[in-house]
Length: 179
Image 1 (cartoon, rainbow, N blue to C red):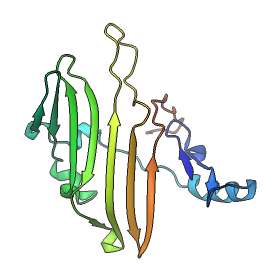
Image 2: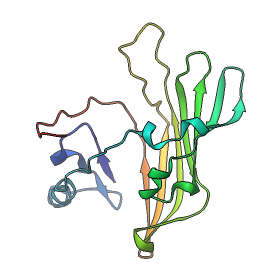
Image 3: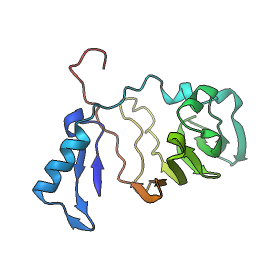
């Protein structure tokens, strides 16, 4: 079990918590964290809104106070991954126009890295707290109980990733130019 905190500098984003259900030893943690934190993070050039085709969103269900949309990805996002197999569903509060939920699921397995990796399962279920009216300083937070899970097969070995305990953090201000 590992913890990833994007608000930390590259050298301390990842922490090893457990191996095989047992707390990691100091030696295991040092070795693992040095390898994992030694790679600089990939620079993200585009915001999620630049990868989503909002003009072609499809209304899936219209509730009294909320509406649920399926949003396709833009073609340029496909260079990263065969995302045509991923359904992204966004739930919007009609009164405030705020996003209150994001879900994603995999329709069928996706092959990546020249077929060496296969994404076999994806399940994202994030519920977002609404900002109190008049409080423009408060960011929307992901509610407790929100989850994301990914199962992949890499060279025939199955791995499962689970994300939980989401929270908004203050971004790390890098001193490196261009970051």
